[in-house]
Amino acid sequence: MNHPTSEEWVPYLYGEVEKSTKRRLKQHLQTCAECRTQLLLWKRSLRRLDAWRMTSAERPTLAFAPLLKWAAAAMLLLAAGIGVGRSMSTNANLDRVRARVEPELRQQLRQEFALILRKELEKTASLTLATARDQARTLVADSASNLETKRLESNQAIYSALDRLFLSLKKDVDTVAVYTDASLRRLAQSANGEPASDSTQP
Amino acid sequence: MSRLRFPTWSLLGGRSDEEAMLRVKTHDDHQEFARLVKRWETPIRRLCARMTGDLERGEDLKQEAFLRLFEKRKDYQPTGRFSTYLWRIALNLCYDELRRRERRREFLRTKTDTDEEAPGDEPVAESPGPDARVASLEEGELVRRALLKLPEIYRSVLVLRHYEDLKLAQIAEVLGIPEGTVNSRMAEALNRLSRILEPAFRDLRESVAEPGPIPMPRESFVL
Image 1 (cartoon, rainbow over the protein chains, first blue to last red):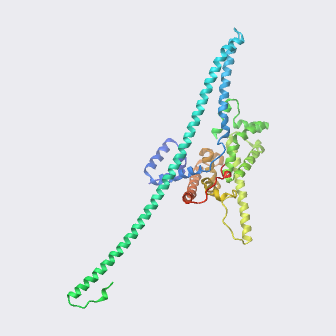
Image 2: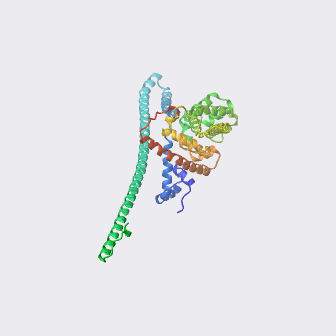
Image 3: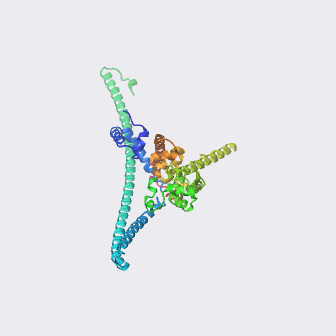
């Protein structure tokens, strides 16, 4: 079987291959246990790299992103308010315009903020869920591997015990056969009137 | 690293990393430089700590990297990504540090041979601290040691791809090698890593199954 090279598997492992290559490699994996084992081993090692983890925030500067989004939303709304105010300032006094625009602006701001807040919460929740799922997957994979090793070890122990038992039984059967043979010979000799001889004793 | 380039910041009138570095180059703009440091200090510290296996050296090397960046600001060419330029500076400093460390070990080894003292096992890395024996039971410590056992060319591709999430093509840019070479180095790195980690984790599981001293978490081992 023609196996893809190790260098071809690396971009596949990280999902950095074209669709056609990905399809070809995936098809190969379905039929080749050797490559499948190799890839699983690599994935397990990569998962284990995560054990050396960070205590500080992974991307501390990202904490500013929601603030920036809020600021952007507020700026856009303010700009819209000023625009509306200016367009109306020619035929009405400023206070009346402000009184009309302000509740609307406040309402829009509240809606925008609520929307942004909900999105951020959803994002955080999905991130947490994804992390938990990954950790659970890692644990299950490790346990499965552990169980498999234990099963192989138990099988090995059973096989060697059976081998020992077989050898011991064989030895017993051999001994019985030799004794039986000797007894038969003695019987035959006594039937023929010959004196019994011990030379056939085992 | 595209996800750290803050498009929101650019939309609000902020500068991209490349524009900021160009300002530093042409106007000696300290404010822009401070912003670049703030955006990049965590990933650079992490890279240096993982390459050297030492959190404190990682912090020192991070500072050296930004110092070098400022000293060499006039050499900066805005043709490529700023991040590629910065990763390269930091990696070169890590390589220098690892070579210095190797020379120190060579010197100590020669000295020990001359003094005709019993040569002990060569340590995998500089001693991480007094409670390393306890921490050696931790999986994180096993990984740290495994990475340090890998030659630098394999360690760098693993650290950049796995921990810093650079694409294989960008790693090729940073290291100045073809993408195919990155792939073959990564394949070899994964083979070697698996050969080290498989027995290490098996031993760890067995030692955890037997009653023994309780492993205490060691903060300085966690980046």
